[in-house]
Amino acid sequence: MTRTALAAALATVLTATLATGCAGDANAGGSDTVTVTVGYQSKTINTVTAGTLLRSLGYFEQELRKRGKRDGVTYKVRWQDYATGAPITAQMTAGKVDIGSMGDFPLLINAARGAQLNRPTRLVSVTGYNLRGGLNTVVTAPGSKLRSLKDLRGKKVSTSVGSAADGTLVRALERAGIDPRKGVRKLNQQPSVGASALQAGSADALSQFVAWPGLLAFQGRAEALYDGAELNLPTFHGVTVREGFAKERPAVVEAFLRAQVRTTAHLREKPVAAAESVAGATGLPAEVVYLYNGAQGIATFAPALKPALVDALKQDVPVLKSAGLVGAVDVDAFVDDRYLKRVYGRDYAKALADRPPAPRGEVWLKDGTTQTYESPAGLLAAVAGAGDAVRAAYVPDTTTGTPWFADKAVWVADGSKLLPFVTRAAAESYAAARPGARTVPYGRALREAS
Image (cartoon, rainbow, N blue to C red; front, top):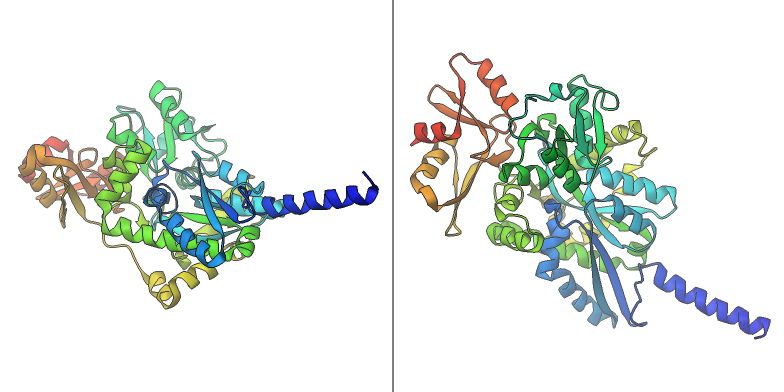
């Protein structure tokens, strides 16, 4: 082969490589086929509007079919499921995942790694959020002698370092006067490994994100020690895209966001059906999915990039910097709402102003219907009256508003009032401040309400 012919051949190979590599093998399958790779976390269920539920509904594929007719291109979607956000970030910076969803702390690591490797990413929407931080919880084994967060000093705590739950643990320990680096023995473990460690006794506590705390409590394998909502700091999950991909195919990013908006509307309109669908796809109990994603669930689903959430992201940066996980992160440059604004049009201002409803109790009956209650006593009376017809009952914590399973909550009788709490520490603190108030078992609370 002559030098000229060799140079021409290499140029052809290089051109083809760049064309496919810049969009996560986007043109795999032929020049008229574009494959979009989406990284998601099926069991991190407050990302379902950008992952599990979106995938099952097929809305993204529908939007891409319509886009493809205009572009003269066949779009295909490759879904890749991960346990945490870290591997999604690794795949995005390698150019192998185009769109990903993850929690607030992993999002910042995503931004930092992208900038460090000159493979920038952009935050384009939110999936589920909680304005007080209730998506993360610290739990202990049933019957543990640990009564409050202060009891964790010197103990072994399992978490996923760099995750939103790790961020909650760090902040909570600091507020309790415990050095998060030296005051506890932190075990960096995947959620499933941490759950096993807690059960085996090799970890004294577990700090994790949805749906692990609720799942373990539902199964009787854990009790809540600390409600993340006590921090009163927003936590959320969001959607990030590779900047190169977004610039090359902005219409695909908008198609994804339109599909996410449609999925969010479906979840809000049909929360029970959505919970059953996610349960079927993940193997999680539907009752646990509904705790987080239900009509009165811990997570509020809304794609808009609200200023309160962006501000919370900025407050997260120093926590990650102190742990040595990131350097400086330009949050304002990372947040990019131009695609979402085009999807919403004039309705974006309304979406930004949308707020979660006031927390209320809810009973899910076995016939598939649900009923909300303004007072805990009213819910207890309804549960007592319905008997075996009840599939699950949820009550908001008296002080934080975090929904929890009624039969797993810690109840306080205060005169004629029956009040639920996620943690024993919060219940005992409330009762200690009110003469005559006392904690009571769930069965007794039911009898007193009926």
